[in-house]
Each structure stands twice: as C-alpha cells, then as structure tokens.
Picture (cartoon, helix red, strand yellow):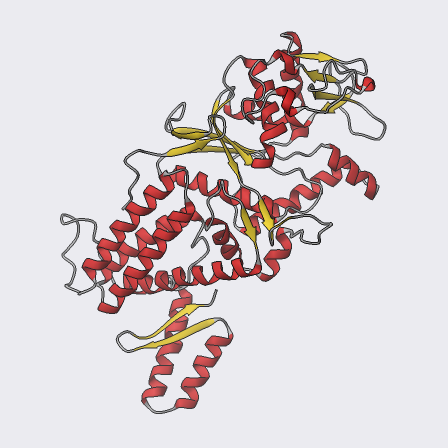
Length: 490
C-alpha cells in the first residue's frame, strides 16, 4: 500500500530557487552526487545531519521506483589534511587513510548506508588532470608562472547563477596576490604547484596537486556523466564550492552540469554555531556513546532538510519519546500480525475474509490515510516533518483500533504499511521491538511463567520475572483485554 502526490515528486532547486517537478534525465535511473567528508578529524553531528538527509532522499526515490546511483566522494588530499598531518608530524596520505576509516565507521554506527560509489581524490588524479586540460585548451583556464592552473572566472558569463550573486559582489574586497600569478582575484585554483613537504603528482604543468573544487567535477562526471540529475550538500557549500563546480564543469563540457541542486540547512548547538572554541563541537562517535542512533536519526527527520536545525539535549530527548510511541505501536501490530499465517488483507479479491473485529475498519482506513498523507509529504520536496506527523496520526488511530480489537490479517496489513513508510525515514532499521523471532519466544515463555505464578498467587516469582525483564531492558504492561504486553525500552 503506497500513495504519492497527484502533482508527482517536487524538488526545491537551489539553482532556480523554486520547486520543480522531478523529471530524471534517464528514467528510472537517477544519478545523485553528494559532497562527502574532508578526512582529517572526527565527523560531527552537522555532517551527520546532511548524510542522514540524503540517505532519506535516496530511500524515498527508491520507494518511488527509481534506480538510484548514489556517489559520495572522500576528499583525501587538501590543505586541512596537510596542515593537520604537519602538526602531528605524520604522512598526509596515511593520516587521510586513517580518518577515512574512522569517519566511515562512525557513519555506519549511526546507521547511514554507504554510497554506491565512494571515490577518493588520490585515486582520480588522471581524471582531474584530463578535465583541467580541457579547460586550458578552450581558454577557461590558464597556467600561472609558478605552475599552478587557475579557472578564468570572467570567461563564464553566468558565473554566480547558483548562489544568485554577481562575481563582483562575491569577491568584493578581494585583491590579487602577485606571487600567485592570477589574472583576476576571482579566479580559483584547479591545480596547485608543489610546495615543500606536500604530496604531489605529475601533470603537464609540473608537479602539484588538485585544487578543492575540481575534484568533485571530475569524479561526478566519471561516474554519472557530464550532466546528471541531483547534486547535494550543505548550504555552506553553495559558494564557493558548488558555484565553482558549475563553472568548471560547464566550461569543460558546454553542457548543463546538474539539473537539480539540493542543500541542507545549518545545524547549530543551543542556538550557536558549532565550534571547538565554544566547546560545543559534538563528534558523531561521542553522541553515540549516550544515545540510540535511531533516536538521533529521528531527531533529524523532525525538521525539513532545508531548514536550520538546533541541537539541544531536550530536543533529542523529545525525539526519543516520540520514537518510543512509534515503537510501541509497531510492537503491538507485529504481535497481532504474528497470529495470522495466511495472506494479508490487500483487497476484496485477495485472501480469505478477515474475522469481524471491531477495530479492523478503523485500522485499514488509518493505513490508507498514512500512505496518502506520507506520500504527499515526501513528494513535497521530501518534507520529513509532515511525514513524521503522518506517522503519529497513524499511531493515534492504530491505538484506538487495537483497543477495539483487530484481526491478525488487518494487523499484518497495517504493520507492513507502517514499517515500510517509516523505514524511508530510517526508522525501524534495526530489529524492532516486538518483531517475531527468538527474543519474542524467550520473553513470551517468561511471561507465561509469570502468568502461571500469578494465577497460583506466587507473587514473589511473578514479580521476580517482571523485575528481571525490566533490568535487561524489557518493559511489561498488563492490559485488561490482551493480557501482558512487552516492548524493548528505547
């Protein structure tokens, strides 16, 4: 059971500054490139916000039937890496390799799926050099006296179209450094001539290394082509990084670089910009020590990806309580669904008629409404905030239906609809509380022992079972109609 908006999927395009119908270049294939990490230190919760947002976008596209090729790079040679390696007196490439593994592990522990392709700059030097050669050949780039190569911004008449600012406005106050050999202060480096103690590669212009912006243009084109569907990243990358990507990619190919540009909003901590100097810098590996990764991901889902998001402990705790409400209903529906071994209710023509339980009609209507409301929300520029509201609306209706009593087949339909939609928001990714399996059987056995003890008025044993289950993270709730129910604590 799934529903989508009558308008179809609409995306807010940073390039045009409006929502547009999503029409991929080569449907059902969708090419998506998202700027990844510069690996010199721990990834933080701001990075995590962007990674989780595009994980969600990727999942909704797949839900809608698109075949997504998701590319996300690793910047493993950069000024920041070189400077940090110099401070630590280690080899820059060894430093980058170490932090690539650490950052990937942190994202995996957060529950973010790896990209389909994760290219590294150092593995694509040849692609980068060939792209720069094209730009030099057609006059969009030039070699400076020291062997560096710069992009000639004045050659790109629509430079600034992504950030919606003129070149003069963007570079107000800039001045030419004579030692750089730039023609214009707006020009930016494509290739940096070698300096003492820095890693280098051979090129037609001498020894050196790539500039920051050229790497993404080269790697995106390598895996997705000269024009592709979606390019994303944090809003802080719009200028200069993404603006320069547009200029150099279109300068080389003469074609539109990207059809849709998507950007996530800023993350603040307690209303302030996150920084080590303010002592509010929160690495992913630190927050995971104290918080369930699913709660962190759900915290992000409660805000639209383009909006700013403020991290506070209270907001994270509120997300945890909200997620627990979803988990309770998922567990209750899973247990009811587990009693049914035939086909679920999918329509009048499928499966035997369900037993007449008074909550069935409400539950089936709630499932249909969830699919409809959730689909409309996500088709409206991936509006996860409204999609979360649709999940909670379903929870309210499902709880009423469960109180009235539901058939196993209706429970199976509702559970499948609920979980399938929630998982596009990365909810219920881990084994959900109440899912059938060995844990259910073990807890069920202990609850039967508890029930038998209570029936024999052996309250010492029944209380011991309840207390031990609570100690290991299992909450038990006694209900008048359904008897003892349990769920894992968040």
